[in-house]
Image (cartoon, rainbow, N blue to C red; front, side, top):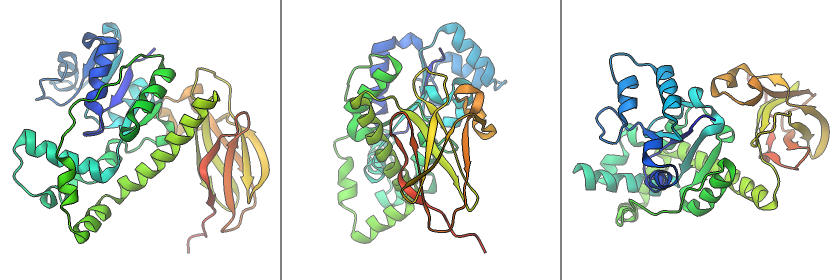
Length: 321
């Protein structure tokens, strides 16, 4: 079994999770990547990824030989997702504006940052950080997507899904991070919101997915990673696979304007997903030929469980001029 890959987005309860994981797995069973200069970064990571030869595959082999249970750090998802697989990849997201305020307080406290909060959030590198950490990986595909604001429930899902026993901790919690946010004028808050609208949209999707998965978990229903990818005048297409160990395809119902239009199994190859190492060698796609017109409402459902995706019907767009 490949190790877990933890994408540690700053100020999302990642330190609590990291220390909890050390308690569960043992510190020696975890390799960290927090950059070449970080004292936390593991020697194995530095040797393979920050030396003269940048050898990700070699690191993966060395990690397997070391028996690592988890790899984690402030790295983008595409750093190791092709190595360990999207099903073993996990992260936590946080409401964007409090997250960036907490990030600012952290820089002031630990890096002696002297600029104002507005100076800080005006820097492009500090905007939409959560989206950039996950760029190229759909939320629906992640093995586990947790929420900082619901950290206890997130751990419950994580431990049940991966068979782990990571304890609940609350570490590295800044006490003044909200102050900078509260001090903003209405115009500045609007500016901050506009600058981080991608993260705000991402977080809204994450909340919906989290609540749906938690509901399925509480009801004892299996979860399917699933996404509707294409709706146009001629067809509906997407992908889905089971979150548990079963290798069977998912039977997907396609609903158009509130009526079931057909059913198809997820057995088609999706080459664009193969870099994420999904189950079934990437044969997780489906499509249904259909005659659709702009404004039609399309939604899919997992036949076995009744799980809807997307969570709300999607309207067929008008053709481009």
